[in-house]
Image 1 (cartoon, rainbow, N blue to C red):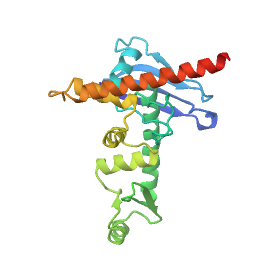
Image 2 (image 1 turned 90 degrees about the vertical axis):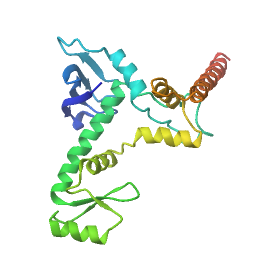
Image 3 (image 1 turned 90 degrees about the horizontal axis):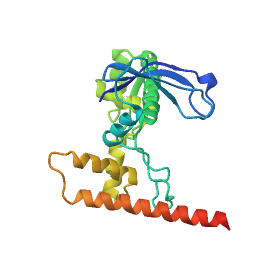
Image 4 (image 1 turned 180 degrees about the horizontal axis):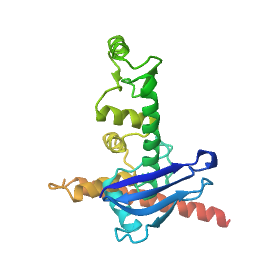
Length: 235
């Protein structure tokens, strides 16, 4: 499923608690939904385009949860993480937010590249140099900063990385695998990895029970938390 955001208009002067915007969501090349937010903290409004006969929002959300990596927990330290802080499976509203951030960062990068030499450091940060992006200036910076990658004139993979950095959007897939390597998977991580393994050509026989155990344990912790909270509220 290919999901795109077109006709995006952001009203920063109206954005208070959330981003005020309007846009059209395209699914597999066809206009499917109108989406917007008034910028006052409420959820996005998503309405089907008249005449559209594509998948519903619920069907898209189900597909996204299985196919697009989730967001991580709010608290990075598992020892301090609350039982309800179990990560967020990707849904259409969350995906729109990610796409908006990348769209704005892409426009910002274009503006920077017109007047500056932009590089990416090994620290995964973007740097801009106050120099007209001529061949001579780019060569000088490339020679003087061999550990940095010049974005001007680079291929799409470098530009995409620069956009993600400017948008402060992490590589969500890599973050999941990093938590897996640390033994710190959230419930959302486990649900997404479970969906990946179930449709793999060669599923891992030991992985699925392990992930199901993580999901079940997270549910138990949350149930206990809610019971304790509700009991305290009744006293």
